[in-house]
Image (tube, rainbow, N blue to C red; front, side, top):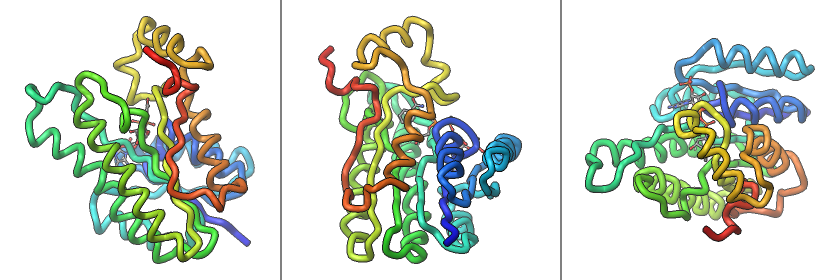
Length: 243
Ligand SMILES: NC(=O)c1ccc[n+]([C@@H]2O[C@H](COP(=O)([O-])OP(=O)(O)OC[C@H]3O[C@@H](n4cnc5c(N)ncnc54)[C@H](OP(=O)(O)O)[C@@H]3O)[C@@H](O)[C@H]2O)c1
């Protein structure tokens, strides 16, 4: 039977790598993007060149109507990966406006709320949902108050979706990446920062989007149906190192 996977924010970075991974695993992939049509088209081409099937669908997942249209346009839904990146303002509380803070927190939750509600009406037994959170949801780092608060709220949201969806056989989990080489992290990744990040991980290297995509692929397509409500750090071991 054909299996369908929707990846939000799949035009580049972790979402693009995840879409390719799921295409490789035989899912028909809906490659969601918000504004960059060309990047999404390139992801579709990459999946098709590898023998898979995909189509790009434009939708701002924070918008209720667009999110609903995105999901109801799927013939069926076996896997949902909520990955769209809502850029965080980085500043301490003293220098943070309520507009910037609430914009990140509300945006992060809006990006998962509407698609999840709609997706659960389509998914049956064996459905899989993965949310892309961040190591920041449990860490404390200067200037990350909005990002950390938003991702911690996402973790809580995911746990409750897991509890509600369990009865219908859908498993729901969170991956929490450390620093990953994507456009979103590019401005922070000086050679010194990259070196320090590598030194503070067990694997001794920074992660690429494909590292995160491989874990998401296994959660969605591997034998993880009995694993639900958990948060998996994908950080090369950074969270077990001190300092
Ligand atoms: N990179 C890291 O170091 C890192 C670490 C921890 C967690 N994460 C998390 O991983 C996820 C992906 O991050 P990334 O670094 O891969 O981001 P990225 O390279 O900036 O890519 C973000 C993608 O999200 C899409 N997007 C943004 N807003 C959207 C919206 N409202 N509706 C639909 N699509 C939207 C963008 O589409 P358009 O270009 O078309 O607008 C783009 O394809 C995020 O949730 C982020 O918080 C990243």
